Image (cartoon, rainbow, N blue to C red; front, side, top):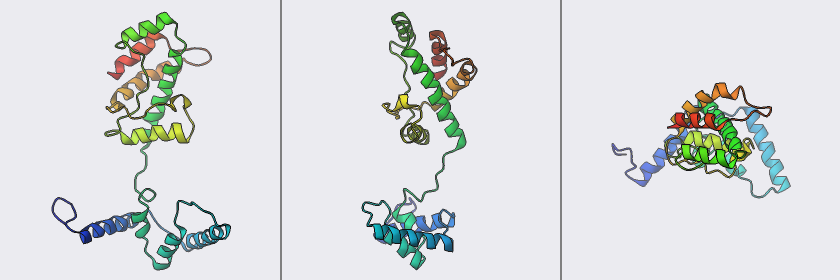
Length: 207
C-alpha cells in the first residue's frame, strides 16, 4: 500500500478490508460466549424450520464464521451493523432541545393572525421560519439523530415531512437559540404560546 493509504493492488485492497475486520474485533465490537453461540445456532435452526424468507442476516454465513472462528468476517461483510460509532450524549441533547424548540416555534406560527404572520415575515427576510435540519456534510451525526427520533421513534411528528439536510451548518446557531429558549420554555404550555417578539429574538441568535 502506498503512502497515500490507497490500495496499490487487488491483494492490497483485500488486506485492507481484513485489517478493518480484525481491528474491529480487537476493539471488542464482537465477542461471543459459548452461550451466545448456542443461542444463535438454536435460532438459526428455528428460522430454517419455519422457512423464514427475506431475512436481512445470512444465518448460514454467521454459522460458518462461528464454526471456523472467522470473527473478522462479519465486520467485513456487515459493516452497517458492526461499526464503532455511537451517538454522543451532547449531540442527542442538542438535537432534542432543537426539535423541542422548533416544535413550539412552528406550532405558534400556525396560529398567528395574518397581521402577525406578515410582521414575522418582515423580520425574517420575507419568509416564515422553519426547522431546516442539519448539514449532511459537516453535521451528519446530528442529522442522523434527528431523523431517527422523528422517523423511527415517532417523536416530534410535525417534522416527518421535513428534509433533515439543511445543506449548510446550523448546529452553532441552534445551540445559541436553544440556550436563549431555555428560560422561555419554562413559561410555555397550558395555553401559553410563544409571541412573535420572542420568535424574532430567537431567530437573531441563529444568525
